[in-house]
Image (cartoon, rainbow, N blue to C red; front, side, top):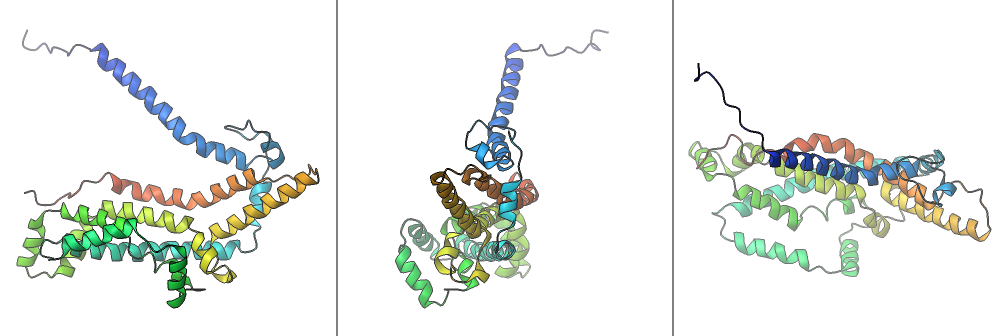
Length: 300
């Protein structure tokens, strides 16, 4: 009878206190993280003149969609959106493929110049030619007023390549040796063995590159500003914001209070519109961030 009695583990007061503290801390952390997003959305739906007064936190005080109407009525909105989507897809895929192939070569121990080439790429992270030499180089290469300037210069990234190389070095060499015994070449090993195990780091690098491509507008202003057919969404939004700021200055000088859009509301509306595609893509990549390094791999 006594053996059938199960002794319950005594409740520790410190464990309960720690769990309560952890729950409260995570809720507060979640609120701090979400507040800037909610505040931006509230400002984007608020009347511009009223938003200048401040005091808007989680909900618009004077509801208005004028800022969104202004953004969606931009002259080159559709063209800029198409070019931004195309450059993001092509730039992400091409950069990921090139950096992954380069990282695979450098990560192999049989490659004689692995350390020297890695050191060379590290130097490029700290030293660059500057804007003027880069502009002259792109002009001589024929990249001016062309779509190629959006994705060719970003094919190789030293940081992304080194991250991929470090990840690939952690994969068991037994997988590669077994494939070579079966007659597999290096490309087969890369495509059918290494790449499937690198999905987590591929997803991470792809997200980083995609965000950078989607948010980039400086190259459009420097190299393609004279060709409206090659404009990007971010550059058009930047021009709209500059125009609204100038109108706001003119309205203030004329003491005209009839203006219902201001730079702060237009900027908030533009931010909400541009972050929607990234928010839609992120959930599909999130699951790879927590995946193990070599799930299903041979353990040494």
